Image (cartoon, rainbow, N blue to C red; front, side):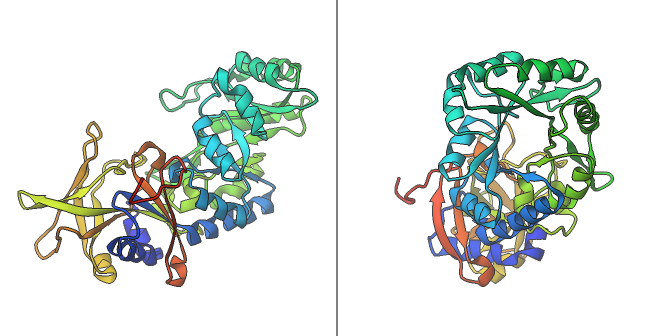
Length: 398
């Protein structure tokens, strides 16, 4: 879905992928991160955040918590991140980024509470009083931990399996009870998703949850919490910052916005540029069809099924023009290989580089992540090869 936009707006990324792979500098089954673009996008987010008084927390799971990318974000002005879970928090903290928000999508397990506190999260979301009490018992006075609550109202909806939080009907009592616990400060509220892409309208729209969030924030601010934090994640890019700030939101959490891969980026030329590709290689032929290596062929299902294509070849310019359809592995199967479907006149040979442009969630794959600088200047340099948990690896050795 994003290959056309990459070819149009950042063709040097595809060309660099082919060149580096053919030189043996990056592996097959790797996501190539364009550090120049990530820096560019992060700078836009940071500047727009300051303009509208928003705290910007970077979500990095989808790019494998990559430390080189995190460093680029910090240098560009985003110095804090949101962590989906403790497996996210550890590499983000180790990479030198502040923990801006913890616990929102996945609660902190009981025996990791103290470890989480040692990372000094700016904000910590809880779903129930038991989790708030666990933090309270672990806090060492005179330290104080800012606590936020996931909320929900009648008719709100969550992704299946994500359901959680405090009912807004009792929000005043919730705020008072949490604020009364040792070492805790009731700091704000959150929901997810706060906005989603509307495929029919081709725009990002607030969800019902978002309406609940804004109304509840107004109620709290009028009843003793004037400095309330309001966290509104989901499909976040700079073009909605003004609207969010105008509604009273104080925290945004761009993830795919930092790589120009939110759904709306597939259709519109927004300020953020596309910042990664998936790199494979033709392994063999069977039945006349070329098979390319998998391992990172998880496509984040934000669109209805669509025809997936890849740029194929050994020479950068030729590969950019040689776009071949690919039968992706079934979601129920292990993605050992993708099967290319060349049409008459399209060339494909064993050893050719195969470059995909789809929306990824790198942390759920077994792919490598190659962080590359200098692409925008025509001088690509591999800064490191990593696993998707942020650890550097000495590829092709262990």
